[in-house]
Image (cartoon, rainbow, N blue to C red; front, top):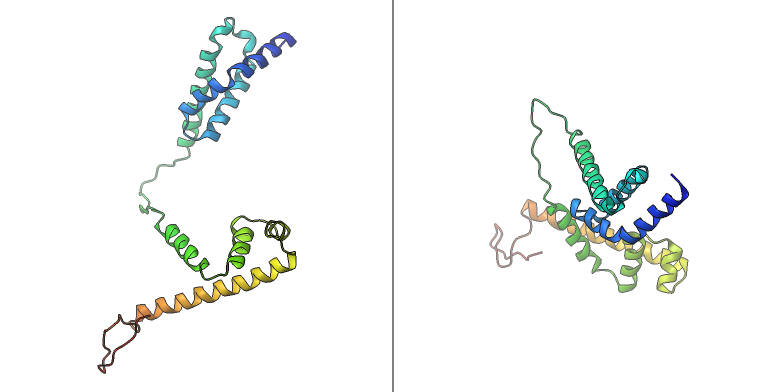
Length: 190
């Protein structure tokens, strides 16, 4: 491709990039996939740019390339499915376990002091280094390490005590308020 055509293509992309990205976003739901789709279409169009006689039709040409590329991606993903004689067990992951785990985590974090909670969240949730956490909280790295150690020990202790409570409840050892055991004595609720 001649230098003038390269500059012409670069100018075209600079001017039409946002409109073409909007078109790509209409073709695929994920914005990152839309950017990939547009980049792939631009690479394919670049090699054929000198063959487009009427540059006013370049948008239509690029849209067609995007549609064809999206179709290729869809077909490639479809080929990953393998037909079998017997259907697999239909297990639907509804995400309820993840929500329950998250709710438990949020509840257990409440037992920590605010400083401990901040250290745990920054180190493990935000995945900051010890030094980054220390800088963010205005403390030394050693303080971050010792606070994290104590906080994790407290979280383990809380999880174990809750696990024991659940096991006792499953065995029927813990009764509701006002309920009497076999000897007629009132039992406390956990």
